[in-house]
Length: 357
Image (cartoon, rainbow, N blue to C red; front, side):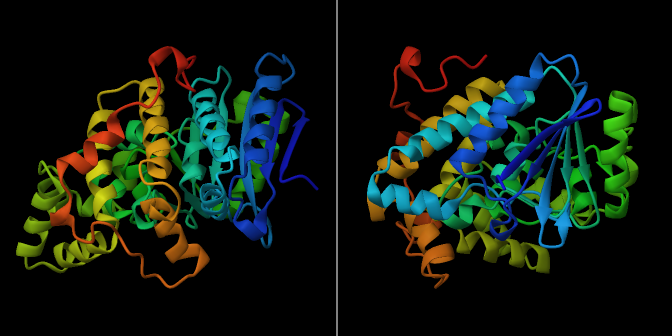
């Protein structure tokens, strides 16, 4: 069976990610199948609404998508496989297609929703979370940055939540996602099958009403931490943020500082700049910036010297959880190391995402 099951039933175009052993991590083939289905249904009058879900070990729902296939990234970077370039170009074009889709697109964000899973859900008209949702953009843990439009959607979180989520890679639950404006509806996971079927029979009439974010935020630990988040993550540099956190005596500040000390120092600096630039950008420009960034992640220092290749090695290949970051300390990163990430390797007319509007 295919890793992506796309079918029209009743009034709905239904997409099921079907790679449960890999937590539905996106391959290049899956990106292409998703794109083909959405393009085919865009002008099909039979399709009123599109919905996407994941498959878990126990069946449908329970696991949405853990992101891109990082083992493929690692192997391709070391082997010089040109499909690595294709993957990011086509994935970001798919993200843009979802954000600009003319029909309601509903994302059932049950279970793990990370990285590339955020890319295929944040552009949805209706983003549904449950009590099982585990959401994160954890890329700084592997020497990468929150891509797939992360600069755009994290930059639009309330206050400085976007900086906090991007830099720490912290995992948040459903109520937190509502508080961060990264979800629209929270419902019990047991109700998802009925909603899925009602989209088939009722089409757009079955779309759930958006939750009042303020009432949902009352159950959110992230919302309760918004004061310290805004205090520390509004500072103008990563060294300033870490120094302030480490000078504070609260448990929250100490734990947050310890998290940041485990992330790639270089990419923390890149990510803070990315989110702050992304906040002022439209989606297409943000995705073009991120396409530049991801190219540089693998090519400014090629092969095993790449911070991203090293981060994936430590987490998913050798699993020693001891990445050798270069430089090793937040305080050792210079502006001269960061700025080349933001210089596009392509002229505007030849950019891989030049046609996005």
